Amino acid sequence: MSINVLMVGTGEYTTGYVHNAASTSDKSAGVVALTMFDLRRRGLVDRVLMAGTSGIKFPAIRTHLKQAIQDAYQGIDAQFESFPDDTSARDTEAYRDGLRCLTPGDVVTIFTPDDTHFDIAMDAVQRGCHVLIAKPIVKTLVEHQRLKDAAAEHGVLVAMEVHKRWDPIYADARDRISSLGDFGFFQSYMSQPKSQLDTFRSWAGRSSDISYYLNAHHVDFTVWAAGSFARPVRVQASGATGVARSQGLDTEDTITLTVDWENLDSGNMGTAVYTASWIAPQSDVHSQQRFFYLGHGGEVIVDQAHRGYSVATDEDGFAACNPLFMKYTPDSSGHFAGQSGYGYRSIEDFVKAALAIRTESVSPSSFNELLASIDRTTMVTAILEAGRRSLDQGTPIEIEYDSSAQVQGFRSHSAIG
Image (cartoon, rainbow, N blue to C red; front, side, top):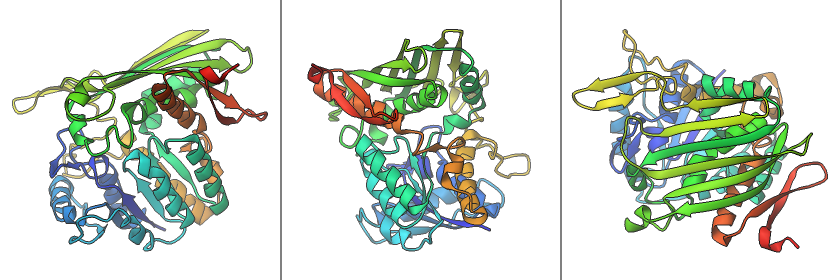
């Protein structure tokens, strides 16, 4: 049995197409569409639909996907149904026409500007569809709770797409952290080059910031790894500025979140420092990604960007490669061979979960351990929102919990008497 899929958002992560050309990042063939086309080839997906805000972009997107995917791999068909039609210059609600083509139990992916996630996801949930959303899942705790309640009411699965959970290094680190005692210290750094300011020019500083976009990865990892025995209680954010504003973007270049964590059993305190930037220079990787974790019983260090594998060519120069994420190089027979990549697997496992809910009558909550479900990511949203509040208010933000230890809301430090 197969399932229908609507991909909402036509940008880099879905198609690899940005500003009327193939992306110059490490995702020029995209991730989501390529995965869905291959899942269709494998019989797990039936209809593939795509919705954007500008129909006149679709002819060029089709040409790009034919060249980057259909012509590059044996046996993959890159055709899709699109909304709005090719003559529409702009229609921000075209995705609703796509939703009307789906039936309850189908899948919707959302890779759009952060401030649009909630409305699109809510429409999809009310349609009875399972929804996979780019990080951050939503921007505020209020939106998170409303979407969580709606998902429960309609019996659908809603999750955040954080592919690092499928990275074998991150997964092993997470399992080791559980045996290292109390949470003591965590530090992460993640960056992308200045070219991303152009890639995301339409929403950068308007609908979101670099902390929501990049810090979300390692905030989620910390919640995934330590959220069962520790919880965040206080967030202080700081931002560096200059480069983006010199390019006409009213947003921070680099954002650092300092988060106090409380160990639940002992009451001991830990500290996490998350730094994200999109003003890095061009280097051997598109995105620097690393973290250090210190528990009371040991430490873990991960350099996600460098796996000991590098390639140098006359055309592209030197680069550190990571085919563990997405293997774009065809195999010796010309077929796509990236099914084991963790970028692919995070999407595949969501589609398989949706199929299992439909065919085996299992509940969405059955996948709370496998996926970054909306039930298990409330603290992620709380940290990210508290960071934005701290930047805007210039004060630390306390995260409050109710009597059942669920995140309840915020207090600014100045309001604590």
